[in-house]
Amino acid sequence: MGFYRHKLIYLLLLSMVAPIAMAAQWVHEESLMISEAYTDNVRLSEDNPESRWATIISPNFTLSGKGRRLQVSAAGALQVVTNSDQTFYPILRAHAGAELVEHHFFVDANASASQITINPLSPAGSTIHATNNLTTNYYVNINPYYITALDGWAKLRVDYNLDRNFFVGSEIGDYTRHDFRFSLNDGVIFGPLGWGVSGEVSKTFYDEDTGRDTTFKNLNIHLQHVFERTLTGYLNFGREWNQYTDTLTRKGGPIWQVGMIWRPNPRFTLDAAYGYRFFGHHPTVTLSYHHRHSTLRVNYHEDLESGYYNTGLSRILPDADLAGHPQDPFGEGRIENGLQPRIADAALQGANVNRVFQVDYLLTGRRSRLALTGRYSLRTWEVQPDELLEVDAGATFSRRLARNLSAELGLHWTRVEDETNARADTWDFRFGVNKKLGQFTNLRLSYSFAQRDSNQPDDDYRENRVALVLNTSLRKLLRQAGIRP
Image 1: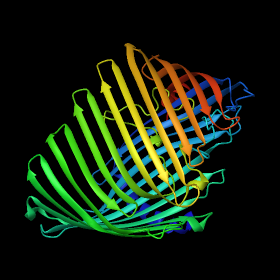
Image 2 (image 1 turned 135 degrees about the vertical axis):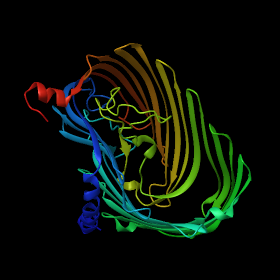
Image 3 (image 1 turned 30 degrees about the horizontal axis):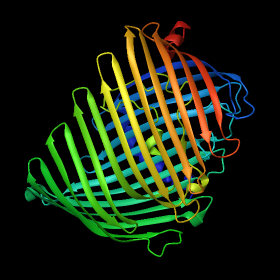
Image 4 (image 1 turned 90 degrees about the vertical axis):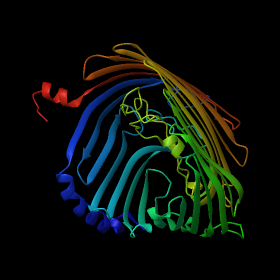
């Protein structure tokens, strides 16, 4: 099902949103990033390291708009890389939400562009490398939904999600996902007793391999009771019906989950549950804690998924940290050597069970920040490949040394392993110094060292990278040139 078959939907929604957008108040910033980067191993080769200089010219922008019935935010960049096998690398994250019929009909839209690792068990590097293991992914999502309240007895919400993924210049096939959902939840008259009924039908279509198409269906009933102000217990039960190609005789069946939410104060929340689905018994844990300068988040869950999308490593142009504090999406060298790529192997399409454990911690002071992260993901397919394990951990420390001078230090480790015991460990060390040269200009010097240890032949490498980056206001440059944007 191609993208152009959905053009009518896009144009109809655009015609409805455009009049609302005209009334919004817009704030935008444009800047230009120029980087001179050097690597002593451009092909990430074990036996034949080759050095290369590359110039990266990257115009970038941030945009936000807010009206009575519309909100928009976007951040994007276009990296133009000289002396490289590929020239253009777009990066984008955008979100828009519009209220088309007051209090009832809404539309959310999301779009992104980023670089993706094609083969997770081979070196990928970044946009300045020549590994032929990097592609660009474009993602578009449109989510119209309807909500209404039924005289205090219940609240109804009906959603339709259209997701479209494009992969440019690789053997990875595009795919489309249609998702229909409804939820009917208790109204205010029920007090401490809560109930809800929800259902979903999700269909994923792969352009290149229709044999991997998946259909997931479920119907759930939710019951909960507030025992006291800080403790809520809940019970979920229902059934799921799934269709996909595999060797299992069971693809669905009963679902149940028993859990509790403990919130002793506004800073701490623990949601813990134990449940069953056709792939086995499993716990689910979500913990969040925030106190003064510390923020901690912990999550473990198991879920049935279609395709591969490593959200734990995407983090495209984040404009807020773990505690929700705003930050410059183009600061601290986020794109000078290319963002850390995600993974979307062509063989990793189809249905899989993903077990994920993730921990994030942020400590902030007046002049210093420490960020720690760890993630474990084990995906299991019933068709090839059978299994993919990913483990990554990292730490980043930054400190403001003077009013216009700061530095940061980072260390990151990643392990990837499949069912054949093919394994690779990659260490990445980074150090950078940022100097503010005025209100609109920053200068950054960074160094990074990467080392890969693999049990596969000719798969190890070491690499040193140096980059000098100048980031300045594009609007100011145009004005100095006599052009008024």
